[in-house]
Image (cartoon, rainbow, N blue to C red; front, side, top):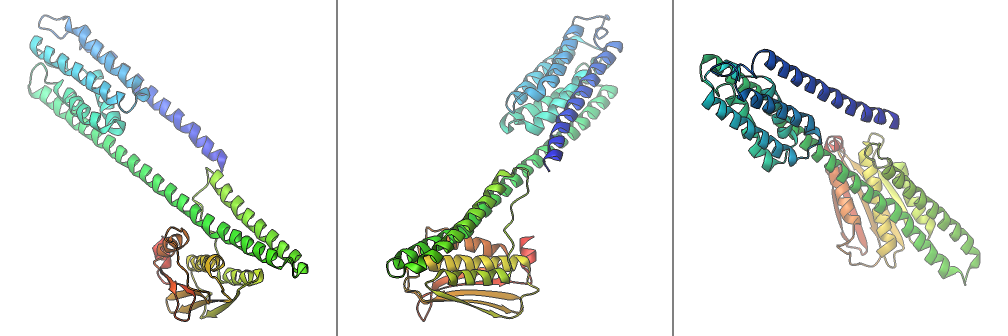
Length: 399
């Protein structure tokens, strides 16, 4: 996948260079057209005028700024546009004071360069500077045809210039809004990806590490009394460590894959929920049992994956906080268009810290598919976590 990305990255600058080259050639062609038409030397009452070189200089200055515009920053670009527009307006005022023949005062090169600068300023100029540069550039474009004399022909040209400038301004502002929206979407996508990584880190790695800690504590407790049970406990610790390392490598790989798509939550089904419960019981200590009620074959994958995360988080919290717990009951019930996942234990009631990320991440994950989570002490003693997941609308919620 990296090769096509690299190719696109090379083609894009080449296309921009080609566009700029065509633009510069077109502007130079307009300068030649203005020269052949007498726009630079036959603009006075008596033929030649000293204002011809001034007008030529204004056109060349505008073209120079067009050539330099790709290298100008978002502040320098509208500032340069303001300067050029001011020079053009001053030249129009001088032409109005000195000339009497309006047709030769028109020209095409300078207005065309001003139109291009209007486009790029509207597209990427700093808003505060662009708000000043855009009106000045627009006035400089529209007022040049009528700078010498306002009559029918020059007024028509002024209206044509105004329409073209307005169209270009709309294109520039529309492109600007599109780029802003794309940046906003990219930022939102990056934030969602980081949040997903944080959830995965907490759910999977914390689950395995908690198991390692519990098994190590158990091995330490029985080492003196039943040393023959230590090797199996160490073997389970090694397995849990390998699983945690695999999960971390998976997430690091997704972080390093800069060209990849957004990392998705690993998919899981009811079978993976059963494996979670069996692994929990195998560690020792509290015994977990799974109760399934209803049919689960047609459940959307986002529902089963979320149910898997609910059970994983609840079992991890049992290992961490359920003191004196001997039994954990995991119940998954399908009832119509809802799936209820409940995990309860018989340990002593405990205080839950509000600064943890487990329940918060669980609420976020369940909320993505329109579900809800409740957690708290149960009537018979212990602690319970219950998640209600919609089945029929889950696909619509995440799309």
